[in-house]
Image 1 (cartoon, one colour):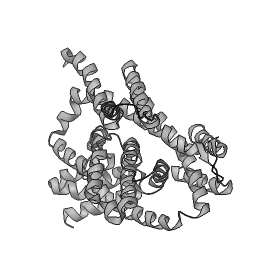
Image 2 (tube, each protein chain N blue to C red):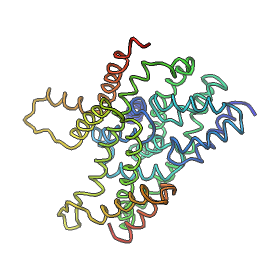
Image 3 (cartoon, one colour):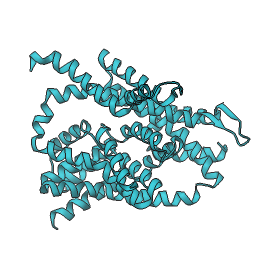
Length: 200
Length: 187
């Protein structure tokens, strides 16, 4: 088979077989990409994953782009990415269209109220895991507390009408996730890279 | 033009959310508030649906938001927008992967960035909790600060996932159980 359709089909298969993305995908990728296709070694896959985690975007998409690129250049990267998202698009569109017709039923409303409570608990367990991995010392604890305080204030505090427009704009920028991510990255750079400069 | 707007907004989500599916939630919370495309309650439903369907969670969220906003083309535009920045960035990084892996500067940036990402997800969690567990509006129009059945259900799920052997079960099982509990107890 030509390499591009093969990339698309392999990554579509990976997309269908994993729930939740991220780490849940690793074993499936290992089987398909390392054992079945020989497109990457275990070590390469681990590298792709590590970089995928610390670059913007979805980890599965980043890994697909890496592997596709290594096999067939930029076109390969794009085709592999489209392959990995294709099944989700189809499945979600079907579910969303289906739900639209049933959302008004009382039982569906009750079911979703239950689901919201369950999901709150599931996210909490994920947050605890992520926290242990990322927040380890005084600096990261400070970043965590400051960012959480600003983001939560942005979500929960309604500015009084008396606040001038300029103040409101500043407040909206300072509490926006985009600003907070950039500021924290800059702070990390300043704290670690500059201080450890002599070691490099 | 709604499709272009969806593409662009999700480019932004894809560009700034680092570390997988959950990291998109704070950006979607922000998006919902700014555009009014979906409520926080709907966002909680989307998270549940995304967790119970195959594929990367961020992609599922984008498709779902895009579809509810502008139908099938909307779902496709949002998803392509989400993956667009990562594809470009990875195609560039792939040229010098080893250097990137070992760069102290990249490492230092992500030292601060990862903590911020977890903090943003925590803030999003508080938002979801507020919708799911508190300030419930009753059929007669009055509000109730604590939605006890939902709080008890959330506590039960948390204890099962965190402290019992049931934690090996797939999240979809807990979502299904929560849906059943919601119907049985008319939450």
